[in-house]
Image 1 (cartoon, rainbow, N blue to C red):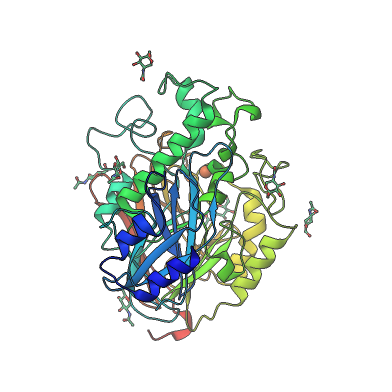
Image 2 (tube, rainbow, N blue to C red):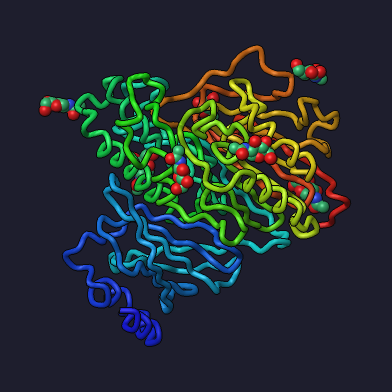
Length: 482
Ligand SMILES: *[C@@H]1O[C@H](CO)[C@@H](O)[C@H](O)[C@H]1NC(C)=O
Ligand SMILES: *[C@@H]1O[C@H](CO)[C@@H](O)[C@H](O)[C@H]1NC(C)=O
Ligand SMILES: *[C@@H]1O[C@H](CO)[C@@H](O)[C@H](O)[C@H]1NC(C)=O
Ligand SMILES: *[C@@H]1O[C@H](CO)[C@@H](O)[C@H](O)[C@H]1NC(C)=O
Ligand SMILES: *[C@@H]1O[C@H](CO)[C@@H](O)[C@H](O)[C@H]1NC(C)=O
Ligand SMILES: *[C@@H]1O[C@H](CO)[C@@H](O)[C@H](O)[C@H]1NC(C)=O
Ligand SMILES: *[C@@H]1O[C@H](CO)[C@@H](O)[C@H](O)[C@H]1NC(C)=O
Ligand SMILES: [Fe+2]
């Protein structure tokens, strides 16, 4: 098998490759190997991770790729993984040796002949080109299994444009997406049944319903955006939840396996932790142009982390590494940033501690000292189903400079992307660090990195693309000049 794939690559006969790839070399006929749920993510300046699902296991998941319109190269792996209640296998192929900031054409194994896609590799650290990216938390399945226009709190208006569709609409304006935890909300299956929203669901069918909601989410995302834009993700409580939307009517024993201990999430993604010394999809970093990005994990793997069996969230998850590993990594990663190349550091974790709702005190105790010590510019969060923009703040003290060259990190919460549970309400009166808060609109954040001194964040209403809040951070970054 390996030999025949390699010889195809050597022949490099681009016109016939997809057909050979589909029918002959890999025997796609009659097998449930049709690709679905396609997505990809950065894996170093010279790499890209391509991921997709199939109903049947692939022995040697393979991707054809090439510069421009060609498909003259091949990459493959042995990573086709699943877990007992899943109805699919997650296939992951790491393509290495790519040119940075370059567009490639690609096709995954057993795709239809003309089913080609494009990705663009990451912008190397230090490259001063301005760009935008999309940031959001808490985005769930849309349609009859999730958020739709009937039968639930904060239902969509008839024909209302969802966040997925809004991202699709803006896909030429942003270079990647960052989803800061809580994907799909498939763990709401029992709540959806109890609410009468999925009236024919039974507890016995729970795992199947869970997996159906999860598959629907990844397919909707693929159809709208993840086939076209890199998709970076982090862990949220809904990747491990077993309380079915707080419905109360549950025991751990009826939880589908995918929803416990981050099982589905660990199968579905391969974030660039190998390239950054991090751990799986839990904590990792990457560079893109003038910014060093860090995803950290507010769910497990620090003292009193909420999802640990001993934690307040009680999701019975983790730990995934020996005590102290995450914070040691974060400190080392922050200390190693070359601020001459990447003057900006933007971090994201799921649970906020500056927010007008329940605060994650254990998260603050674990992470805030490091964010202050290493001069993190922007700290992003989800988890609360609204949009909230803070002023820069450290240890509860408001930075006197505001957005005009503060030394404290600038905090934002945006968990307003939309899902079955609808929106949450802000607790009033608002905290003194809150500048702008919106809890009635589904939306996402567009960040624009202008240069080494200015970054703008716009809160975009998904329904009509209107910018409902906009603010620009200025940092002098020691007199940087690009
Ligand atoms: C539930 O099942 C009943 C009986 O099979 C059927 O008539 C009804 O349409 C189903 N409802 C939904 C929402 O699927
Ligand atoms: C895009 O997402 C919407 C829900 O947000 C979904 O109904 C639609 O099927 C998706 N489009 C594609 C092409 O998958
Ligand atoms: C979750 O999975 C990790 C990795 O397999 C394991 O070490 C840990 O004990 C699990 N946690 C629970 C609560 O099952
Ligand atoms: C983990 O390390 C921290 C800090 O060193 C310590 O306070 C804590 O007790 C340790 N936890 C466990 C479970 O060993
Ligand atoms: C903001 O509120 C905190 C806590 O309530 C308080 O300690 C601080 O002095 C307040 N700051 C300002 C500028 O009002
Ligand atoms: C950086 O970008 C901001 C916002 O677009 C702009 O006002 C400023 O002049 C730029 N700085 C330089 C040095 O170009
Ligand atoms: C866009 O939608 C938002 C949220 O529903 C609304 O507040 C705003 O007025 C709308 N803007 C326009 C131009 O329709
Ligand atoms: Fe959450």
